Image 1 (tube, rainbow over the protein chains, first blue to last red):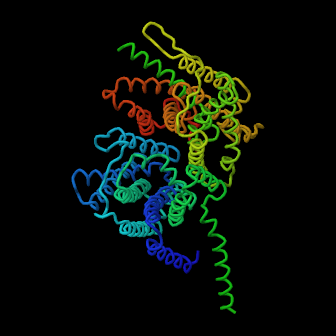
Image 2 (cartoon, each protein chain N blue to C red):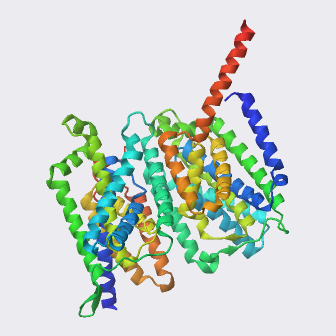
Image 3 (tube, chains in turn green, brown):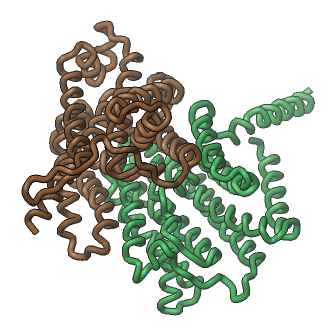
Amino acid sequence: MPRWSSAGGCVALAVVALAFPFLVNAYWLSVGVLALFYAIVAASWALLAGYAGQFSFGHMAFVSLGAYTSGLLVTTFGVPVPVGVAAGVVLCAVVGAGIGYVCLRMQGPYLALFTVAFSEVLRIVIVSENEVTGGSGGLEVPAWFDATNDMAVYYLGVTLLVVSMAIMLGLVTSRWGLFFRAIRENEDAAAAAGVKVVRFRILAFAITSCFAGLAGGYYGHYIGILTPDIGSVDQMGLVVAMVVIGGAESLVAAMIGALSLEFLVEALRSYGQWRLVLFGALLLLTMRFARNGLLALAWQPLAKLARRRMQAVEGEAAS
Amino acid sequence: MTSYLLIQALNGLVIGVIYAVIAAGLTVIFSILKIVNFAHGEVYMMGGYFAYFAIGLAGIPPLPAVLVAMAMSFVLSVLVERTLLTPLYSPTTERKGDYGILVTFGISIFLRALALIIYGPYPLRPPSFWPGVVQVGDLIMAWDRVFAGAAGVVMLIALVWFMNRTPWGEALNAVSQSRESAAIVGINDQRFYMLAFGLGGALAGGAGALVGPIYSLSPSMGLMPDTQAFAIVILGGMGSVAGSILAGLLIGVSESMFVALFPDPSRSLTYAQAFSLLILMLVLLIRPTGLFGRAHAAME
């Protein structure tokens, strides 16, 4: 993609994002808040799975861990909400690094299995220890702001998404991003070329778990009641569908995939359960026929057109 | 107390046989296609419903309905394999392992969502294979469980016989050892990928049909046996059918002992679900090759 059009895209996205609350009713505003939550989760999973090649199906477990940590700290010890969320992020970083460390010997499907198991064990513990966590009935947590002010929460979400995306994009365009991709393609070759594989695999888990925990804290204090379902395999499936349909090898594509799918989920509400079938089918078709995601598929002709026009302009300038 | 423990152990043995059938299917798929099939539990679920509707709509008696369910699961699996898994054999596909993980995970979500619509969220219970209970001294057991265990053993024996004593089984074994060498001696590997995936699916579907009258059916019933089957497959050693069978029995019995001996009865059932997950995590951490792993069956 040429630079001018991606800059234009950014400006257009920013304008839409900032004007959004004034254009829609309260219902779609709350959908917007959820879409922002999924966007952070999806982008961080794309960083972990698409860039670093670590197919963890336990990402929603970190969302749930961040949300419950913050919720429990705020309800039991009365700490301010931002402090609770920050504590959740720190805990997710530590646990994420731990999972990254114990998974060092595991590749591909073994890692996927281990993380699914971790995620389910965490969910089962939350369901079973209902005296602390509220179990399946849910845990009531205080809201971000005193009055139920969705617009403020929305702009907070936009800020969090922009900051998260800036950090993650900075990361993937730096040398570290190169190391992540080298490990994804071939671990032994990366190690032979001097990449500290151990350090960067652990880092990939720790960093992406931070963002999952942040998103979890944001979500928990918006939605007001936490249930163990947030860490379920079906939720993970939704995030995987978002990332794969958008494009797993680009953080921006994954983010756009999450935003559009969340709006699609609500727009198709009258179709009820058929939506999950539709997303499942879309996920399978994308995997089968357009592995780089539907956005890349749409981008390619556009980029080609732009390139041709640039060449024409340059040709005229040369003659 | 001792008779209670004995009944629990027998129940565990029956469930262990069912686990072993599911896990053996997963192993067959793994050793030939070299993928971990995340959709295996959903085929198990579909098998249960196939049997239910074969009995309810087509009026087939319960026993042949198990065979019908196996045949339909076979067809379903072959369809899935032909439409979605062929990129796994193409040399132009990049990072096949990642493709296998994501595509089977997608299939599992798709089938579960579809089942929720077609069958509804409420549990359904197919009619008994054999009503009533059998009583020996203090020990009581439903005939359904006895039957499920016996049928599972028959399936496992048939599988071992098929894999070791028939030309097709030998061809499957050859493909699992080396695709290229198998092709050189004239084995059409495409046909055996189809057969392996269908066979694995048929075993899962048969297990689903057998547990229907015991536990009743629901669209999410595949989630737990799926992770249990993974635990078994890895404990038994990836690619070893005999290992899967032994590990299945081991996990079935130890799980029901765990439920019986857990100190806090109000939580024992929810934590029982975590039991096989913890075994899975421990085995992955301590001995990823399992108890009977074959060296050549390692992931590519």
